Image (tube, one colour):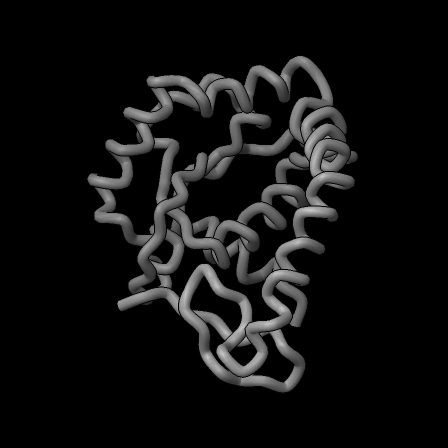
Length: 173
């Protein structure tokens, strides 16, 4: 089945097949839209990438080494091993009794907190996008990971079900 999306024309709900952005009725706007995207990319692409890489991703030598690990053959093999072990299902959703397909492999204890666990297959779990966002928020408050935060001196938690309970307590009601 071909991938589809809604027409970009305001208040038009017609579906169009990728890679088009407008339906047949509004197709005259397609060339103008593509040209505006190219103009934006030419003027903004490099500066956004540069800022993200220098300010966020590679803000210091430790972070540079952490992210370089994800481009190694070792990580590729570990990731594939975990995906096959867990059958491409989110471990955090599974604890809650929900079956959610996912492809992101995440460290249970973040490598920013304990770098010795980065290549430990028992410290890896598959996580869906929703759980990954919630877990990242929880990690930032519990471990103190992330930009502008200071690492806390806490006991690492490597049990997925315990993390799910703590993540649900962390959510605002």
